[in-house]
Amino acid sequence: MVNDGNQPNPNPNPNPKPETILIVEDELPMRTVLGRCLKRRGYKIITAQNGVSGLATLSKASPDLILLDIMMPKLDGFSFCHEARRAGCHVPILVVTAKGSLFDRVHGLDIGADDYLVKPFKRDELLARVRALLRRAQGQLAIGNKLLLDNVVIDFAERQAWRDGRPIHLTAKEFSALRLLADNPRMVISRAQFLRQVWGYHSRLVTRTVDRHINSLRSKLEPNPERPRWIQTVHGDGYRFDPPEPTSPGAA
Figure 1 (cartoon, rainbow, N blue to C red):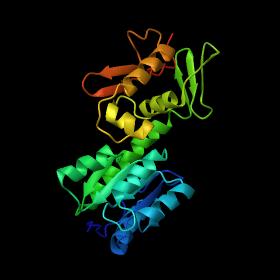
Figure 2: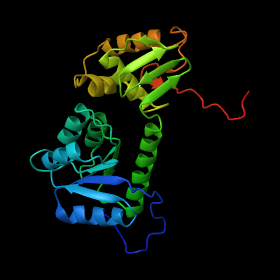
Figure 3: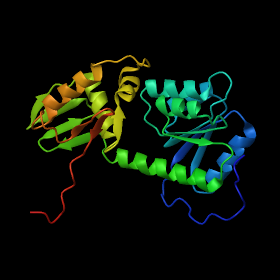
Figure 4: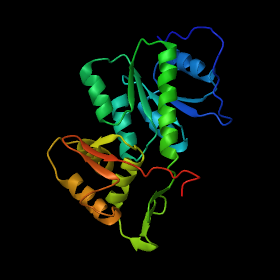
C-alpha cells in the first residue's frame, strides 16, 4: 500500500483548472488511497475498476494522466495500455503495480507506458512522478495543433502542411510519425516505438518502413534533407526531433 500519511498539503496544485487523473485499479482500497492522496493535492479524480471500464471511461473523459494497475480482471493493464495507444491515446500512463520484475517493467514501457512504479511505494515518490509526467505533457501540448519549422507550417488538426504558403502532401502515416516526434522533443524514438504507435505493429522483425517514412518527411520538410536540422538520426537507437529554438523578443 502507498504510505499516504496525514500531513497537510504543503504544495497544492496551483493550476486554477485542476488536472484530471484517471485511476484504473481493481482493488477498492488502493483506488481509495490513491484518489484521496491525489485529491489532497488538488487533482480531479475519476476511477475505473478494470481495463474494460477504463477504456470506456477514457473514450468519454479527457484525463491528463492515467494511473494504471496491471493485474486486473477482464482486461489487464498491459492490454489496456496496448488498446489505448492503438486507438491514438497520447495521455501519459503511469503504471502502478506489484509486478516489479525487469521483464514486466520493460514490457510495460515497450507497449506505451510512460513510467513504472512498483508497489509498495512512498506517497512523495508517487506525487513526484505524477508532477513530472504532467509537466512533460504540458510541454508537449505547448506545441498545440500547429508546428512551425521556419517556412514550413504543419497543422495536425486539419492534416495539412504548407511550405512558403504552398501545400505539401503528407500521408496519414507521415503526419502520425511527425506528431509522435513533435510530442516528444529531444527524446529518442526507437523504430519499435514508431511501429507500435504509428503502424500498430508489435513484431520485432527488422523493417525499413520507418526509415523510408522518415526519409520522405525530411525530403518534404527539411531545407537540406542530407543534413537535417530537425529530424535527427540517433544511430543504433532511432530518431529524435530537435525543435527550432524560440526567438528572443529583442533579437535582431
